[in-house]
Structure formats: C-alpha cells, structure tokens
Length: 276
Image (cartoon, rainbow, N blue to C red; front, side, top):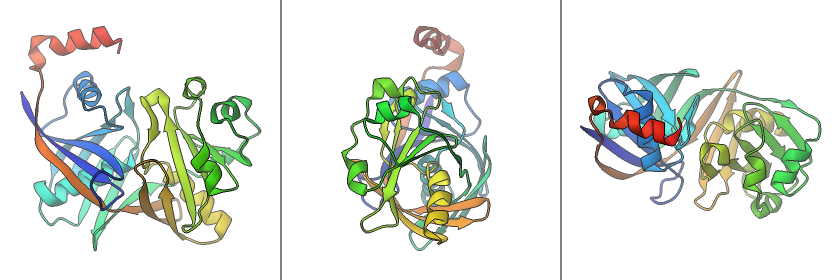
C-alpha cells in the first residue's frame, strides 16, 4: 500500500529551520497502530494524518511514542499541504480534532492557528522539576504541561536538562520561558516521554505562553521565539479564551511511502513487538 507524504518545516520561512512535521493525507483514517508505526518510522516530533476536503478535515497527531491531543506545528504544516497541493489557494481550513475545532487562516505568507487558551495556574516549588532542569526557576505553573519561568533569555539558552529525571514527571511536557532580548518572550520545550528530548518549535505550548505573557506584559499581541537549535518565530494574539498563533513555513519534501497491507498481520506483529 502506498500513501502520499509531505514534510514541512513549520514556524520558519527557511528550509532546515523551524519544526519539521510529516503530513499524510488519507481517504480514511488508518488503524491507530499503523499510524503510530508510521510516526515511529518518520522519527519526527509529529506526524499528522488528514481526512477531508472542501476546507474541512479531521486531523490526528502522533509522536514516535503515542498520539497527542493537540499539536501546533503539524496543524500549520497540514494547512500548508492543503493550500499548496490538495486545494490550491485555499486560505481558510477547519480541522476537527481531539481538542475541538481548530481553524487556520492564511494571509500574506503567514498561517495563523486558532487554538484554545490554556493559561494554567501557579503551583508550589517542585523539587523533581527543578532537579530535572538543573536550575531554580522564579515561578512554576501547571497547565497541560509544566511551565517554568526564568529571569533571563540566557538562562533558558544555557539549560541542560536531565532527561532521565524528566522522564519521571507526571506530565510529558515541560515549557521553559523568559523575557526576550529582542522579542516579547522566548521559550524551549522538552518532552522526553514523547520520544522528543527537545521539540524545535511547539505551537501548543503557546496556548499557555500567550496568556501568561499577555497578562504579565499587558498586551494582546506578542512576538515570540523558540530558541532551540533549529529555532522558530511566532506571532501570538490573545483573544479571550482563544489564542492566535501565527507562523511561516517551507515545504521540504513531497513523496510517497510504502506500508504493509493491513490484512497481512504485519502491523499486528509490529505492535506486539513494540509493546503498544
């Protein structure tokens, strides 16, 4: 069986920057185990699977380890594939997902995601989190992820997490952030439990970052940068209980993949072998 596949570098207008996502348009969703096996084979932070047409699609996202309920960069990358290949010129797309309806709008080279805000709450000191980061944050919050605030961009850049310790936390993702030197804020994102020690640019993290920095800085429009090795730029807008997360993208690859016939039993054998 052959399936189309695209790879898009999201949250950057340059190839080999931003966050690469694999996108597989389908006529119907594949068995979950097969989608997970494809994501493992791709070995990117996310592989997205799409079914739909006329600007309305169903979307699911898989890391190399498991399915996730929300992913920003692979949603942006999916909108790019739709606009450039599946429905050329389409400027608005709607995705039905595990996190509800998500919109993407294209305007003047930028794709803006319409995502739910997840502001989180402040929590007490967490020795296990501090130990995994190797540095004491000035503030710790909790949303879908752990969220650690530092005083300076340089502190965030210098972090060398203990990923083995981070694997023991009860949330799979850790956001770290600080004021930026030439943007409103910077961040990094770690998710070793998802098979991704450091994610290059994390759209979903900005569902938490945007309300935090909007409240702290007293502004609704923010410029952000994720300062991973690849790096990426985002424009974030606070809109009540929603956030706009905008970025650019570059298409790196278009092709097809071969996967075992679902009826052969090969997928069942792979799933047993990997313990899923």
